[in-house]
Length: 517
Image 1 (cartoon, rainbow, N blue to C red):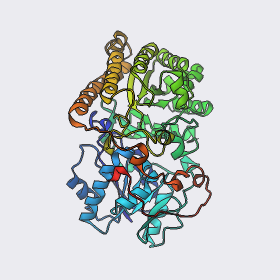
Image 2 (tube, one colour; image 1 turned 90 degrees about the horizontal axis):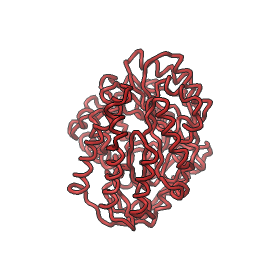
Image 3 (cartoon, one colour; image 1 turned 60 degrees about the horizontal axis):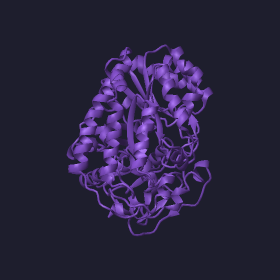
């Protein structure tokens, strides 16, 4: 079949401010198996620019594909744009099949199929096996009910097949690198860059995160094969930077160490950035020289809270002492520690923000990034926040960079002010300025200057948007905003991912949730 993979434009700050774009890794993961199955596959990446709607339609349909497959890592915040694109495509070609995949449609399949008739089929969960099976069935005009991991309409009603088994061998499917022009993708201030994934899932139980629910069990690629793929990208395609999409690539010390040693043996010059946990860095204090030798330059450390009570409430499992030690160890070994801090939890007061500032100063991070607690349906935080009020009804702003929940003890404008003060104090300290402009290591100096440049642009954008563009009002509760829990879908990790076949879920027609009205 002739297929178009579409990466829609994203409104999030991270897509619009830097002027640099990484390739859509998730779609490349789907594209490789589809090409190997004999299909004619083309990628339309409409995020750079971004493309106007009319151009997206032309680019997607000019060779009359049998189906357009839409996916985006932006998840909730990208969904409104996906809906607009689906409607435009159907107006232009009513007969084209539109398939939608990703985290948001996985957990909102009933809402999507009920409220967006232009979307025909949803791929739920991992798509590398499900999508080729779906396309084969469409080509042969066979029924879809025997394919695990789908949602579609039957007699006008949304139905879902049992959840697909978890992909246990991540090396059994390949990435469709031939779908992109490597020269068109950069990051880190002009460095040719791609996204890669060493592992999926997370063994930890943080309530605000959906990694464990969507990916279920932590799994990893073969360390030597993963290192060899990085080396091939560097040698054959000029890739300079790898951005790891993993939540916790370092979860297994022995596996991560094997990867580092394999990459060192490949003897290629590459920069690696990613995310991990502070306690893994502390655990690996004796092998951090291998991190540096392999090319690791920066790790984002999700610290989220700076007091032990908050860390316990969100089941982070870390500690302030380990957070501080991890930053020190990274710096000692010539690497950058990017510290994220989260605000927006219900019990916060002005005193908590003051304590957070003081604690972050004690951590002495190289870089900082703020995020807002966001109750997506696929996180335990969604249930914990069910009775809290939503103050941001525009789903495009549910991107962790905007306040979406009411904080009872502090008005929204003051939360925003505290966040900007914390960022400014940390980034304008003499130590931070020295690392940005006078650090003796040119790689660290480049990274710090690039991040500082982006940060200034983001802050200006955020201030203008908060006070002059965005509209906030006290709306429904979280439960009312998202609507019914889709209990069949929330069993995703508990039954279907283990391979257990449950009966097909058929949904009726409840009142649509507030975000669709």
